[in-house]
Image (cartoon, rainbow, N blue to C red; front, side, top):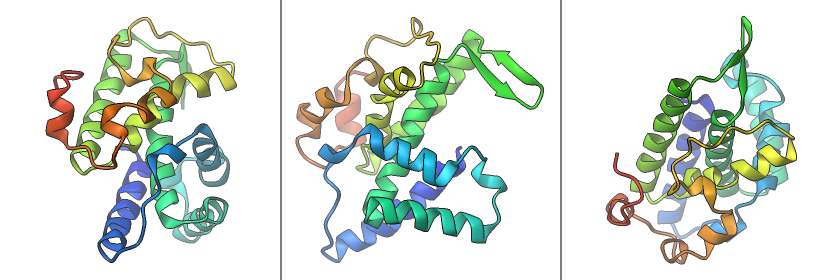
Length: 191
């Protein structure tokens, strides 16, 4: 599981407690690629988050939060970033490792996608659509970065194939709450 996903879970849990006290939520309609890029440029900055000392991580989170304006936006953007980056990486031709550039095999692609879908289903079960929405931003990010894209293997019913505007208008996103059972009932994914 991604370090950023763990951070997002902490912020999401905190924000759910704030919501119970009457604080508002960030509407899903505000999801966009600029949130993903803010995480990339203000938090990740080309490093692995797990290697950062706590004081540096805290400073980067504050820097990111100042750009996003609210804790809820911070949690949402971390989930959105994770969904987007994980999906975009799985469609790249190559990935970087300590030994250099390596080609993605079909097995690696499917394993990455299975992990992403599992994390997405878990998030949806907690009324959190942000990973799902991030998946739908992956094509836009890959295009922005001029990445080589190999996406023929992506299932046709994946959120990857529809732009985020489609999902924001979808019946399940016309309200904030979506349960995992509702998602299973759509028949989109059988995990």
